[in-house]
Image (cartoon, rainbow, N blue to C red; front, side, top):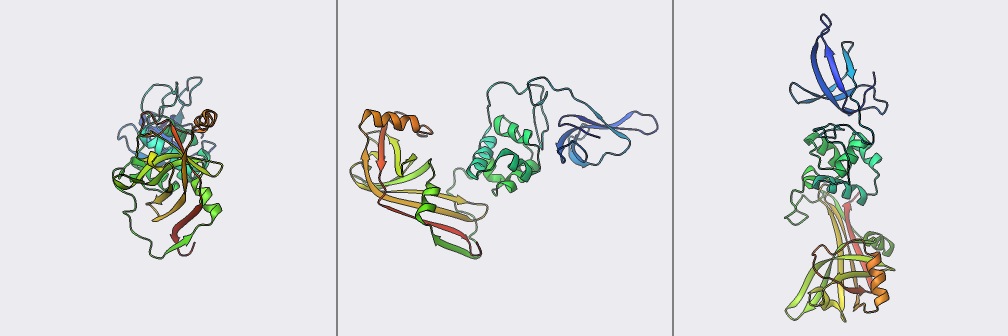
Length: 303
């Protein structure tokens, strides 16, 4: 017996041949489509793990050409919810964006993540690219695969500061070397710049790039980050993993200057990965040349 996601599993009465129960195959546990299957039963809408017996057979569901499934996904490892083919440009939901973002941050492929989460790669692709509504079971497996939490994938706590979880039983705080600091700064992201203003010290978040070991960010001439120009400033990047109570931070200190050469501005615009999240007209590029680069990491003592 072999099946595809979206096919029907039909169980018949041995005596009459009439259908006793049927359901949709929403999860495959083997790449070749052999049992067991995750089945969403039509009479209860519940998903259970099924090892089909001799009274069961597969009812094929024809897929439309040029689509992944004739009825795109709803749940588990490829379940479905409506009859609209997967066409047009990707339009991911918030959960899909968080899953894709965390997967890419960890350097995982879809195939690797799907294997860890025990789901079909096609369903993971659907989840990341479309307005999907995965079940709690799916989210638990994804959170485990990505070493995060269901709440984080759902966006819970987005209005709360990070680091409210429990501290490690035996934490280890160690310094990061220059190469480790540069690796964590990566090529772009979100950091915080500390500046002195007429109203006193201020720390503000900015979207930044790393170009030739120089921190670059865009702002407006009358903004708080613009006060960095012509002064020595501090720039900090960090990451906290709430699920494992681990994290790191990197601190850059150095002079900041504004970029005025048209060709240099054009090159920075071309190499930018994203527009500033704050929106508005933020076309003034500021560069921070590091003179001091330090970092720290919190991890379990046995790592």
